[in-house]
Length: 133
Length: 373
Image (cartoon, rainbow over all chains, first blue to last red; front, side, top):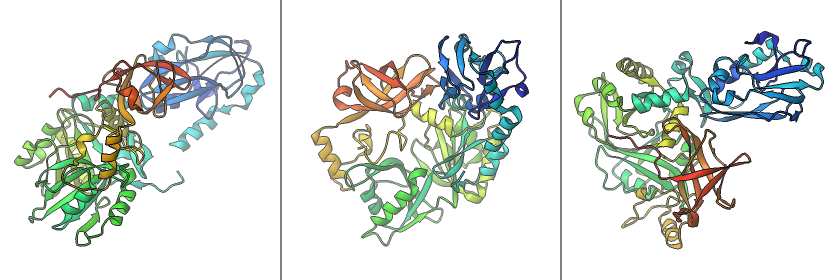
């Protein structure tokens, strides 16, 4: 299942979070944007956190490494990590080809679902990406 | 970007063809066009085309140009014959490395013998100043920075020379390794040398600034069936790392001595005097303190510049200067400086600290990659 990038919210550092709603009971998937994946290219390594960890918005939750460089992944929301896409590290193609679907990174039970409203909307995030290139 | 950056004569081409541009040593340079791995593999298996116009090009004219250069360079210059190219270092009085360079002995079509120095982009201003400051007694030698009037293009890979073959006069096809000449390409003056920075066979072209775009297109056309892949500085870095070629600012700096870098072959000590010689001789007699070594890791995570190198007990014994996942070897590789005592112990075991995670590393002879032919 791929998600509509227009319906997601973003951090300026290229992480996305889906909307907390009744369908997911406030448990949201997070990931990194297709722009970020495109900029990284040549992905070789992905590190993700363990289930159960409490994170604050902006905390490091992993790192993704390409041939050229390492990038830290920050959590766009606060809460508890309840699921990790543990197969992804061995299937980095999913991250490359489907960053909004099979390429999700972790699911977080948000401690404050209203936090989502403070993230960048898709259009704002896109404008920032366009500006940087 | 807050700093004004220079562009090469091929800048418009890079932008029009999807080059991902980034500032490097004061220039806007293409880092990659496709992916680093794709471009890297193209160079290893076929051929790649690089814009390396950011490199500094300095020309020395006059009968005593060789004597001046002989004083500045660690490598012998006085015995150089027309057509020879040598790798050399330039050092401070205390032996610290100012730059690594290629020195060319060339003859213009008019019969004038002159020398050309190709220096690192990031060191160009410093080297020009250094040369100017060490001119005493050589005021009669004409010294010109010709970087801006020229461009430099590298064609690298097993098919590089066959791609260039139809574009150059017959004699150039048999150019030996580290040989170069002033020749022409469809009537345009060019300098071609069998040199490179990828660990592959290949040619480097120095052309007039105004001819650069046309020659670049001609090369692409000549290589279209191979195909010749345009490649950026990203692949250039992984290629040179596999070939264990040092990069200034990583393996080389003013704080590092050539004997620590393992570049003894570039030092010609006997029967000549050059800046830094006595300090290096003294340091060698006192014993080298650290050495450049190669390390290979398991897994996928690379130990990158500044990662600490540890011994078996976890004690810091050195530091990584360059590291990346190696596309050819399919594992992480790194070059590092480690204490000579440790490096000289064949039974020494190594670990690296990658942002808090300590991983085992295996000492690996340099280069990591050596071409077959």
